[in-house]
Image (cartoon, rainbow, N blue to C red; front, side, top):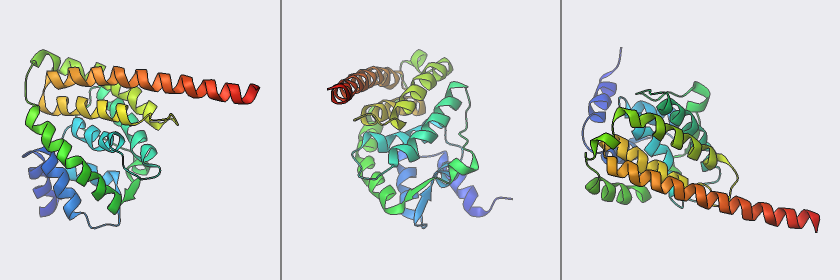
Length: 212
């Protein structure tokens, strides 16, 4: 049986902007480390898009937290795969749900993310319905999965543009905004191009160093 606090959380999940829920969680979390499972529990019935946004935003922001791309990138792979399969609710295995970052790092992330979220939430709105229909979950999930894999790889600057692309796609899913989904797809293509060029350049340098 759920307690009153859990019921209140579930009610909150269904109302207000996503930025409000994120700010409330950052302000009320008391533990020294913030686990992914805690975020999922707080979000309650929020869509997979909301969790994708939580996980992708740190990748799009210059946050000095060692190992953060692995902590958030691996769950991004799993959540993106669930979106690809058409799931409505996010799920993480217990071991992955226990992955955590320091509360101070999480609060820093939220503080830096909120201005961007507030700006985007004033822009996104339901429109171009055919681009935001249920059919879009499969291709968006496939693209997010590819970008999430790139985030976890040791590629120079391989997390910022993919993280931004997933964030825009997630906002488009949350708000049913086909235009945002289209912009997210363009950003994803840009990210793939940048990562490909960076990887090619790095491979050339390593090849020249080893065989010189």
